[in-house]
Length: 314
Image (cartoon, rainbow, N blue to C red):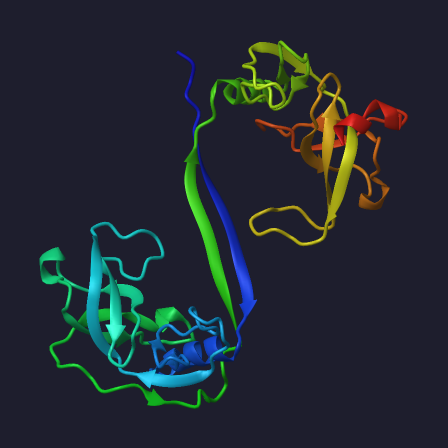
């Protein structure tokens, strides 16, 4: 039975964004242990605040301060916290309507178990010891026996050294398991060969193979070895260094149509100054010791390919 391949993959993108006056006041307020909401023209207090009324779409700027205590409106128990979640011990995800607010805030509740959580229970904010102007300045909510607090009070939203921007990390961790055709492709690469599959209808050879022709929708099974040389069809110059990638910028990443293939694959182009890479450049793979795929492609020294030879692969 062939080996079933799998590999952990991470897609991560830290998104940097600036803040408008409402979000700036809200996050700066959290740093100062103050919870702010915003009042709509209809008199509703929204926490967390938004900049436009969700009903009328009018811009709203009337900030109000609400209490750090509130009532759980609904909840779900999390028995196994994941990486970067607010608490390391089991906790409840909760929607809390803070006293003075008309909407609920999503956060976590530190409780000994699901039997200790209920809709309607009273809770209060547990502030983080170190605060920087982020939703994590609320470390969590904790049970708190008290009666309802008072109404929201107007607030001018002014604080010293306001927070004007945040970095919002976006990350997806998953395990990828290729199918039959990609598995054959990866095994061939480990042997320093490149294989594709030919469509039985249109006769095009696709590299990397996917097990079906993307044009005809027909299953493919006929293996075809292509390359190893190919032609640069298009390319870009990368000037921003990626985290965890030990390649000095600038470098060139391009689409390469391997000889015998009807689809260009992508790869890094080296062995040539970045400003000398061009469409039609003939290249070949460079393998590192023990590598399971080409490290990069370098010029072969052949004359450039004629544009008509690769124009359909751009």
